[in-house]
Image (cartoon, rainbow, N blue to C red; front, top):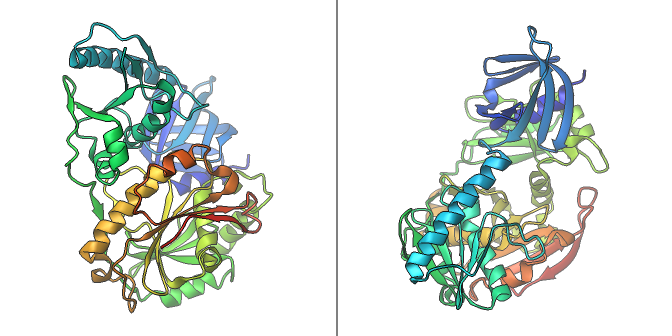
Length: 453
């Protein structure tokens, strides 16, 4: 059995969750998983791979058997942290809904809720993580403290989309201690702040939300010009025009990538090859698999990284005024944050900072996730952190708000985008760039919208 595709996939993520026979979820580091021919070792478990089924580009199900057992196991690999079962997730959310019903009745001094719901309203873009409640003269939407931070932050988007449907003033209940990102947004969004009742829940009581909370913690790592040019040039020369050198700032290294997939990481002390060696063979395998028209799972996995690599190479087609000498990925970084979009920080020829947010598929949270990043960039710009830590050498930065650019395939801009963009701060210089759906073959700018001033 050819398991090379599986080996490449497992090397792309640092953390995995393995579901064993649909019952047990095991979080593992990629270093705890090894694959040799058709034998896979997952922690202490050793199994012979019988069948590989790709569920999604970055999720795979394996049927495998231990030597001493006739019955095979089903191992499902998910990227990232432990995932709860669907049934367990529903039970937890239903229990929170019941708890929140009692808390809201106590807060509003009413005996009952007229109607409540906990389902995914795909038509209006409201997820099933947010229980909704109707009272005689008001409504409420809430989010469980046990949800991920991304889901907690998404309650703002859900509230904005739900409010026009209920024709009542809406209260938004957020978990105490998980509200810092929402509070940071609300300080810049007076219409949204005043248009809802913002409440917080500490597990026992509901009270008004404290808007003056701490800012989410972000970090600007030092940027060094590393003496690695010779080895990076030597690696890139193996496939000129195909390999791309990108700063890996948090790791104080240079990442050599092929259409967004890291093949080598070069630091002052070592060179790492995440997908193994010889590198020439790896280049041929990834190049053949990750190209337009390919049916290989790698052609559909980690598409934001692929789109990022194209935009970095062709940045001046996107924004002609960009200084292409200064393009930095993931700066600043969120401490302990959960983000599923790609961020680029760059600068125009006249010194105006530009934040570029990239999505390859529809994501209703894109506008507010982009706002979070812009807020962090502005905070560090005003503090002088970028130039004091080695960025934009030789370029004087203007004392103006950074320009925010949203880039996605035109058809991937979520249908709720216009409503949500309308809620963003008026002072935010925003541009939307829609590209063609077939960007993997050739990128074309189909629409630029927004006034940059």
